Amino acid sequence: MRFRSAALGALILLTGLAGCGGSPEPQIPTDIAFRGDGVLDFLRPDSTVITRIAIEIADTDSAQVRGLMDRRTLPERGGMLFYYETEEARSFWMRSTPLPLDIMFIGTDGRIVNIVPRTTPYSDDRINSEGPVQHVLEVRAGFTERHQIGPGTLVRWRRTDQ
Image (tube, rainbow, N blue to C red; front, side, top):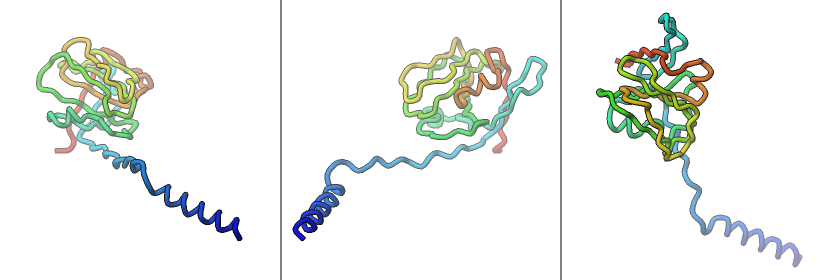
């Protein structure tokens, strides 16, 4: 009887301690849903399509600052196109971005200037264009290698949400 009382007391004490002290578990936010705003084609030199993806278009300052931060998922054939009015050197980072990405820098002529493949999640390292570009495209890491997309590949995109 004495053993049962001691065991019961210990169980009550442990149960009480489990709910006390320490900070609560961090709340994991609901993932941000992909919003298909358009489509983007990667083209061979003869203008045939290599592959097509759905794109979310970041064309406002707030959308460009947010980018793919806090996104835990991205469709295999999806990406985010950063649309800018002007052509200039661009620099990105992966702060608050949990997914590794391939980042493509695109000139005003629609050709990929350079690609930074398999970026490091949550990194503050700068990811730079190799010269002036007008657009930037982010896709899941490994996409460019799987589809044999490289500098010089032409991209053509259009909105489908309007």
